[in-house]
Image 1 (cartoon, rainbow, N blue to C red):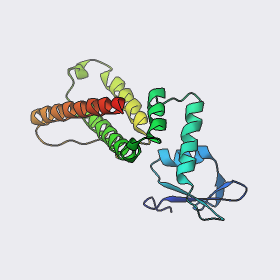
Image 2: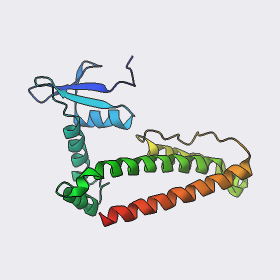
Image 3: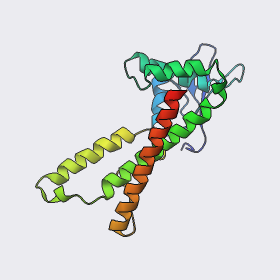
Length: 188
């Protein structure tokens, strides 16, 4: 059984083939992307030199997705990233991006919790339960691959009315922080 805490070790042979050391078989970039979406950390090492090639292959996976029309990164963000390599901003960009993605993960987790915790006056409408299950399944599928996501089964505790107000305030704060980050990013 695989240890999910340790990164999955992939070795690259001289032939450029990628070898999964856990399952003892060859894998493709799509396989590696699937491991990552499933929440696994991956480390890719060149067998001969011992160099860590993880960053290179992750960038290649992103480039392939972008070239297939699965655009996640807007052109202006890509342009700003290219500029950051030639400016003094290079030193703050990695920390900024890491913090931004952490906020995004936390925001999505809170959104999922809020979606399932709030009482809904539509619950009395016939067939509403089926629609709600479909929405939860859709949101859960959208959250696949985002570590830290609690999914639609998130449990909430405490008093419902006080919890609802607290959650609304937290959501408003998250929205404000996200807007501030977007503003800062556009200024870079």
